[in-house]
Image 1: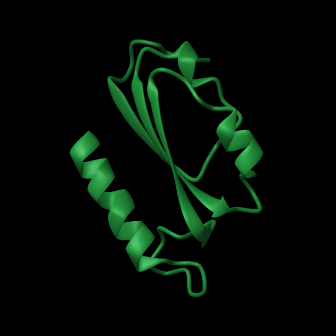
Image 2: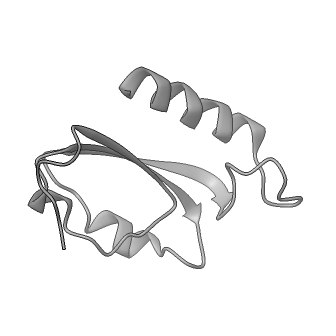
Image 3: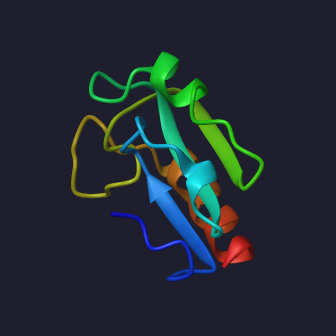
Length: 89
C-alpha cells in the first residue's frame, strides 16, 4: 500500500522499475544502469512521471554504485549518482 503523504523526497538506486511513481506526492530521483539484467531499460523508461527525475548511467550494469562489487562497480558513475543524490536531498 502506498502512503502518499509519508515522504517528501525519495531516492531509488537500481529498482524497482515497475512502479507507478505518479501515485505518490513525493518527489523521486531514480538511478539506473543502462545494462541491467534485473531492471530492463524498457521498464525504466515506462516509469516517467512529473514527480520523478530518472538518470540512466551508460555502459554500466546493476551494482554500479556498490564499491564492494568487483567487476560491477563504476567509480565515475557512482560519484555522479552520489553528487546528484546529495543535491536532491
